[in-house]
Length: 224
Image (cartoon, rainbow, N blue to C red; front, side, top):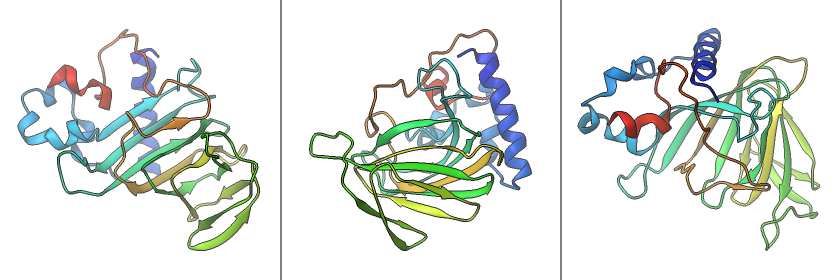
């Protein structure tokens, strides 16, 4: 992805969060130079990968298969006692986050506003493949029985709890607009806890055609 495209997507995301009346922490708007020399005071942000995160999953087409998110808080089992994480995400109509599960993380996915979120679900088998067996999930605390490949549509205010090993992919329902998605979970580690059904790239290769507007989590090492 080109840095200019990433910068424009971040600008659009800031506008959307404002439309949703959702406020990011002040450092979300820092310029790259603002980070220099601040590792001692901002080590939790850098080490736990808080902040702007964007990927096209190696697709080359962000709007078809991609995701932009902001990690607001996150623990680090090697460095602190925080056992939880929270993310804010924006999902476009028919923009896919591909099928995956987590070995360690249990999470709630919440529709915070905007359009509707479609989630397709499968249990996993002993070989970490898609299972054809039925399974159960909870949506807002209500138990539901599902068959392999069933889809749940979350309207604003609704949520689903995704346990470890439960395959899921999601996208915005067509005709309903962008979706403001929240995630509340156990500690998140996007470097080692994503089991994609088909191999994808979690972090983008960036063509630096202009300077960063704001740093991505993958940029921190260059500035610290």
